[in-house]
Length: 137
Image (tube, rainbow, N blue to C red; front, side):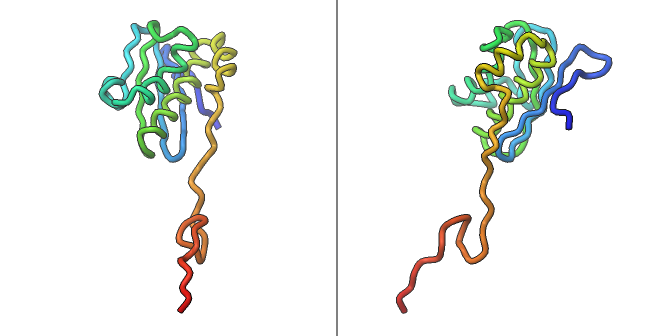
């Protein structure tokens, strides 16, 4: 299973990030620091500062935020899950783009996938763990 690779015939690096049910496909190329998520600027797509910091973390920790252009296609999940998926995808693509950044990314735990998922509903219960309300009569 390949989660990051170099695009054939171009100088682009590709990375895939996942978080909960969100999936982000990331493309990085040499540039001036432009970040587009689903063809929208970062500030428009992620209105909260926490999500923007989450997406920018790999670029800031490696010092590449002014030297690469990032294009992301993300779908599924909620806003927080999408920002986490973007973060992992950018980190994986940066590792392919510049091999020297892997140590910094790994030191800040940016290459580790968050494996927490929603637990399935179980038979006889109202959800994963909640039971039915007790009735005396």
